[in-house]
Length: 366
Image 1 (tube, rainbow, N blue to C red):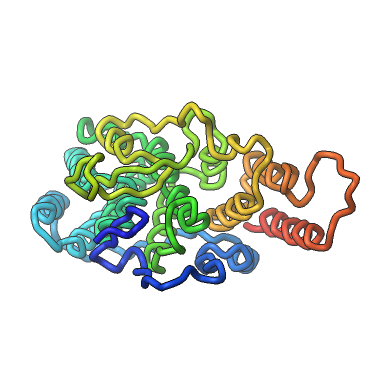
Image 2: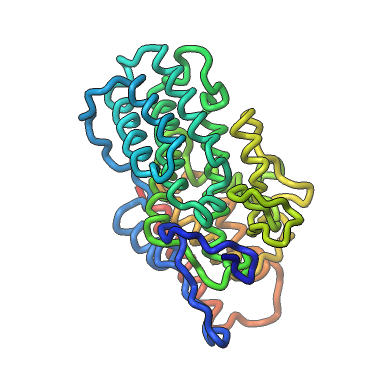
């Protein structure tokens, strides 16, 4: 069934919450998810030192060979309702690579890359499209990317020849996936811009996004990469557009087509999965630059939430410094750099105080 906004209601409930129709619009704006609450994120960061942390990978318990596991995984793709089995096999492969990486034969390295490429080409679309349409396959794709990044961490991308060669460029893959994570999180921070009545991701989706970021962090420092995504003229996050979901056989002009709002064209993701060609920013330029130093307050708050979400280690130097400087000194920032004859009001002082404390937490995190 299609929602009035053009987005399909997923038959599964794992990815997004169902919104009950009501006779009148809500009188208050729904709150941001607790997983993206600025206060909660920075409180956790102050207590823990990081918000993204890789979980321990249990040792291998499976006695099957890599070739057997890969064959079973490929068979799962031909069956329905096999996402849970697929996830378990991918977890076993990830554990095998993490604990036995040095002993893996080159032929098995090639087989692993070939199999991961096959999995990623199955029901191939962006993270946001999968979360809203087929969340159970979003979970499978996350586990698949785990294996890819663990292989890179263990330097297996340097061994063997063949397989899905583009997967061996771990940094390109990490940037590509991180771009989609930022887009997905934006959809929950600025949901009106994404055509949503309220934030819709369930807790399990945020947990999987966090685990995906922890996997990316194995090969690419998160905050500097997020800064590039926000500001890069070449590969940054571009403007929002209506997109055609790839989880439907309908054509774009079909009245029943499934549309959703995103900064990323699913067709370009498919091209990356086929060729490894990065998604380039549109001629309009990256999102942060498009405001021309007139960043609205809701955008500033969204970026603060992203900084808190992606904080995995200490302040990460110059990129984070530049990003925070932009948030504070641009117009609508708490300490704008332009001259003003107006005295600061109480709300501005409170906002500035909160942001100074956040900076302190970032600098002191380890």
